[in-house]
Image (cartoon, rainbow, N blue to C red; front, top):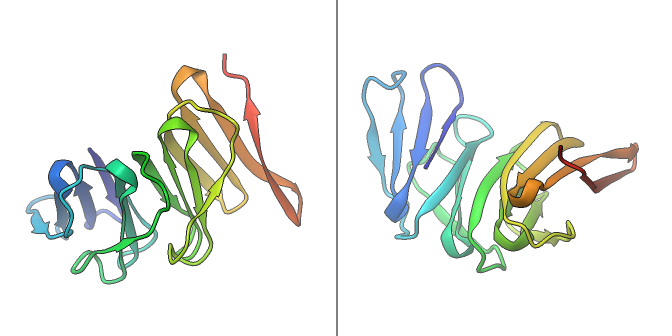
Length: 162
């Protein structure tokens, strides 16, 4: 369902049934990694070669601190399907999901806070260029931007899609 590459040699793939694969040779060979869940994983993101997260059905969030050798489940506080995950550092990240679910963490996923973007549309993808500049997009033309209105108060706002 998704792929995350740290560099030209290392990448991870996730899919149905909690499936995860890892390559260290640019995709010449892939090694299966046990995630410990049977839920479909919809997205994966690595902040660096060791720190990664995967999200999926029924609010599943997994994390690894050792390059996927061991995955552990985090508490998401949602049962909605999560469609994407993006970390701007090893501590700060976002997860987006069905029915307007948008989660934020500033402690590597030890706890997740639900944000209120003001939509019931499914949020499908996230992308950030810096910790205070990002976007979430979803069904029905939904587009949200996240940015610093001033240096101390980042804001989440809806943008009209064309």
